[in-house]
Image (cartoon, rainbow, N blue to C red; front, top):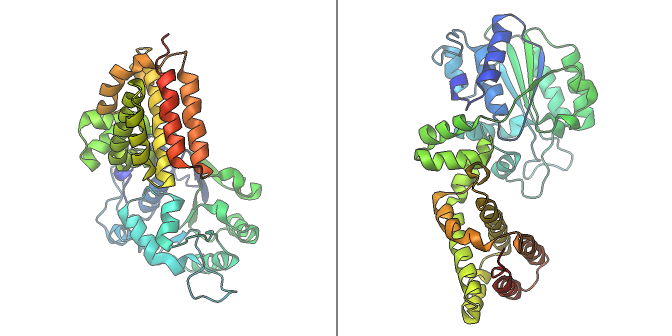
Length: 379
């Protein structure tokens, strides 16, 4: 993977290049930053940069034998450590290691370096199991790193989510970091550095990353996802520098389109005091599953917020699609300081009630019925 494939983070790339050019590569680095900023992507690009035999123009070449192996994440001097679950049909005392799931890991990386622990758990088929790093994992890594570099250069140990180590595993890793094998670089990628042993944090150089610049997210949406520039601009603003959130926005687009239609129907029936229409609407949305019902109400809550803020005529404070904004232009006058708090509390209570398995038809009919009064309050 090359630096050019990492979304944004130009300052972080420059700092990493300088470490190599100035011969100041630390033996252990801890990558941290907000979710979706590209910590893993940058660590992978840096590992590739270190292992490339012909790096130039501030990036790995992408064509040397080392880069050819790195494209498949099969370089013998790049060692991955990540949280895993116990494989099916294994004995009760079996201690799982990363190599048990290396095929699934390579598949996930091949799909892209931006992913979550939830996606990884799903890939392993974890269901209710917790993914961890066992003591056996530390022993395996110690053995791998004790061997000489097969390519005569760096050996890179990339550890994803080290905060999921058992304390005994962390203590063994600490010994490795304190007395690293020759030409070994540890790259720890953490979502929660505070959960690591203080002794490990103190022996690594912290490499903190910021959120991705909004223009970089927008450009990536256009060039990598084929989104038109206006839609990309809106999604980039909503993402708040989180590429994972931008991808979620793309995935949720069709569902949100349906939720907007539900919101428009509900508010229209409520404002018209059409009791029969409210009852029919309540019956229709009752057919959704509980989780979808909660997502819909959360969407309603967001639309109330956006409608209220829209009245201040500050475009930088609103985060809507074109379709949502076209509706809000007409709806916003009905959300004001006399009803915005109660409307928000109404949706919040409905989310709570649905979560407690209340009768969904009654909850939704009550939401629509109370809205008949609230939406007619004029500022």
